[in-house]
Amino acid sequence: MMNIPKGKKLILFDGVCNLCNNAVLKTIKLDKHNKFVFASLQSNFGQETINHLKIDVTKIDSIILVEENYLYSIKSSAALKIAANFGGLWKMTQLFWVFPSVIRNFVYDFIAKNRYNWFGKKESCMIPTKELMSKFIE
Image 1: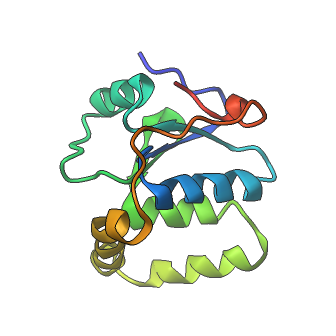
Image 2 (image 1 turned 30 degrees about the vertical axis):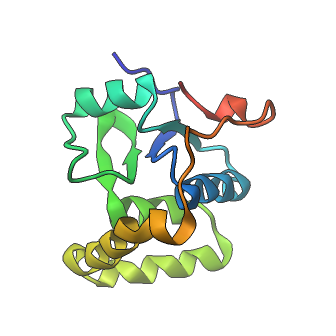
């Protein structure tokens, strides 16, 4: 059974995607209230979580936000919910909620589909530094 630390939100991400890894590092930097923990989709914990939530990763292979009571958001909705926690100019991203998810996810899927070509891919998942290790569940 998956065990997300109490009071935290879990971000599952593609651990071999350069864009995704950079987004995780940016999220850690902007997470002033220490709300997020992370696991790669490829990790044992990520796989266990995906199986528990019965998520089809052939359709969702980039970002999943898991909140209290194992409610989860995917794609653009996950990205917007994460950005809502940052404050400052990041609050402006909440304007994108006016667009239906089908439109937001069309743009999201276009970027996700091309992310390896545009940003590259690692041979293996990112290994967090000692300072960042507490933010990751493996």
